[in-house]
Image 1: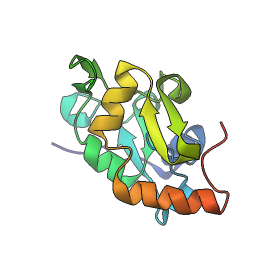
Image 2: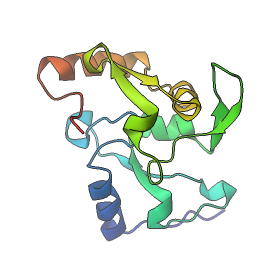
Image 3: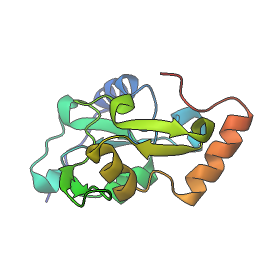
Image 4: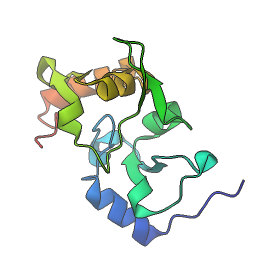
Length: 142
């Protein structure tokens, strides 16, 4: 399988649209310690294209944990649901910050499945959020 090249211009549009934050865990690129990557919402392995409507910005860890999945089980109901699509769904309708921005909680089956599947509260990220909160860089205000 050949991976489509994402031009710098397309990456720039994706980054701007994502607010220079991971579309899943909301980590800001300027505090992440590395440049974020472009995620195929529907992976190329499942027929997804390298088009603006199928791309979002993601931190490396969220991208790796999401891998080639588009569905996961809602841990509350066990139902299989689609993972969060940042291009067609609104983050705050599926997720909320808890403990002043330390944790992400899922508000819907999609939100809960995404929190669980991508491990949006992994220990290293929660520890980083704690520091970002102390210096006033987190959580995002939108």
